[in-house]
Image 1 (cartoon, rainbow, N blue to C red):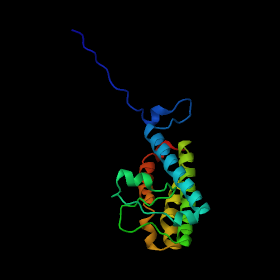
Image 2: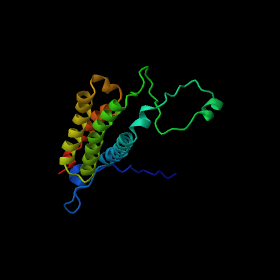
Image 3: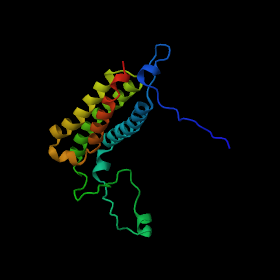
Length: 173
């Protein structure tokens, strides 16, 4: 009877990752960056679309979860739909929506830029990302008030990601 002993490959330590003097990005940092690329790019696209089509966004219908499949087929298809789970609907005032999308644009742009820099293992990307998160927290409050925190919950995930990126700072130059 033959036994097969093998070990799963473990991720190398930062010292072992150095290959010809070039740092190698960890799998965890790569995953964080890719998730940030997706989230920030979608957020940037949403901010641009909302800025361009503010009137359409202000006419957003609230989707009720009680529709039957037949009723759902009869509903008009629209780009903007309020899928919020809370009792408070998405704002319908075009001026308020424009201000929220203006606040979302630099947040999305800076977090995307920061993730791109961190993907290249540049430490400055972490600080660009953190600046974007701070702007994403403060700018909606400044422009709209504390009610804006109801519609900008994505920033709170970015705070979590900033902590996870901080754990990978030693891999960046």
